[in-house]
Amino acid sequence: MMKSAITVSLVEEARGGPFVFWDGLADAFEQAAKLGFDAVEVFAPGPDAVSVDELRSLSEQTGLRVAAVGTGAGMVKHGLSLTDPDVSKRKAAREFVRSMIDFGGPVGAPAIIGSMQGRWGGDLSLAGALDYLAEALEELAPLAAEYDVPLIYEPLNRYETNLIKTVDEGLTFLNRLQTGNVKLLADLFHMNIEESDVAAAIRRGGDAIGHVHFVDSNRQAAGLGHTDFAPIIAALRGIGYDGYLCAEAFPIPDSQTAAQKTIDSLKTLLA
Image (cartoon, rainbow, N blue to C red; front, side, top):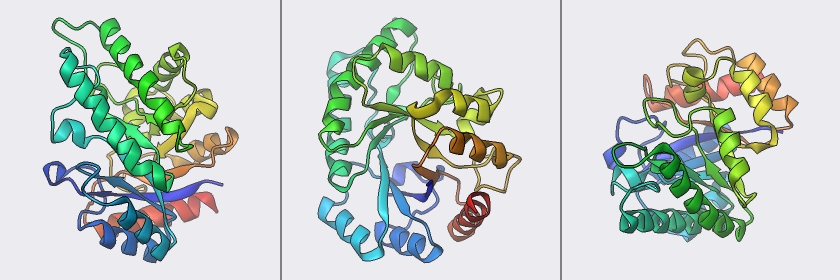
């Protein structure tokens, strides 16, 4: 059975970005619990921003799980990329992701590789960048497996990366890896830009899909854009997806309204 989740950002440098809650972790857990969400996805500036004990305590107090943890602060705050031509910077990027795996793993939350995948260009070819990315995921995915969680890789739209933009490209990339512990993140906003048929792409993704960012065409809460969610939910049911549908949405017109609209849409769609 699919479960609901909502995002909270603790990264001041990302303010204005597509995260619903911004007023601290405790507030996010409290608000999400009141609205009936199942989990919270945490975008933190680093592993030291919140202790694992605090994360576990908030989870136990509210009955909510931690759906996933983002690693994008590695890029936003520190300019780190897993495909940086500089070997020392690639190493620092892997260490940052490793630290986030160790942050989320103890509470059963996988780490998401999104913006930290970087880009190719200049002296770095697409093939070279994909080699660096594959090398990083081969190293990091087994670390996630130690916590019995996958490593989540997110294809992004053309304006945010020039590496892997579609589910099919993601599947091709996963097939080259030796590790089987990397899953794809199906972000409906990115897919709205890059996929000709979102539901069909999800069906092709099948059990390679390990997480879903549930958001409308304009990256606002579900119901505030033009996405037809019914065939998407049908496709997710068809592949047996039982993970989280997580609102990575702009807090428009405000956090509370975006959260309420999301949970109302989910209740209707999953009824």
